[in-house]
Image 1 (cartoon, one colour):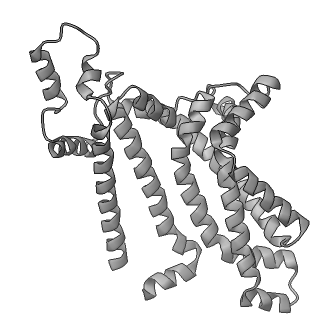
Image 2: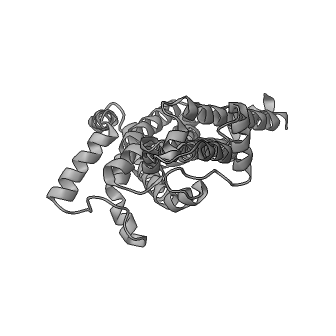
Length: 316
């Protein structure tokens, strides 16, 4: 119980610090918010400037502005976009499905191919297949996402015309088809990480006592791998999959920009370019909360998958 309370307290403290840093960083950026709110109009009067300052609380101290913003966040009010003159929550809601679809697609790819390649490398350790997989995944992890995305667009969208150049499709299978190249781009670096973690976790289990005991009973190797090695290696694998998936939300910034997707990542770039402070603050806060939420869920659910973790938590 005390461990849960400590984790909850740490989560709240981290979120409070992160939200303040996000809010304060926007006002530390070059430029005056009033300049972007007023625009280039020449008939702005002092009364109009004062009205804008009062409307957006720009005439108050930073702490007071932060308090207005954070209390609004708790009530679902993320402010109004400087550019679109619409509630930021509505804009985020319209862009969220594309980003969640892209991240989910990429997560499926890293689970299937990342874990699959890691299993093959572990089973064939110190053989040709292991060397090829480790080398190929290391090379894949070294390619920047935007370089890979541009290359995939040039080859498979422009030259071969197998996939659309840009856009997320209209929905259903068409959206799945349109998000294939972006999902591959987003998942490739993460796939390399997952495959290496899977390989390392399984290799450690191959030398454990319970695996040696299973071999002594004459059990076939494939059953040893499935029931003893892989089952005991799931903890680190699932943890890394969750961490990588949560971090991919931030990785959508480059991928959505390259492929012209109207998601959260491209919205962040757009907000930065137009100095739309409420929009940028909301997107950054969403990314932080999403990461913390995913990691917390994994921290809670992992003991259910690995009883040894639960036993360690109880003894501590």
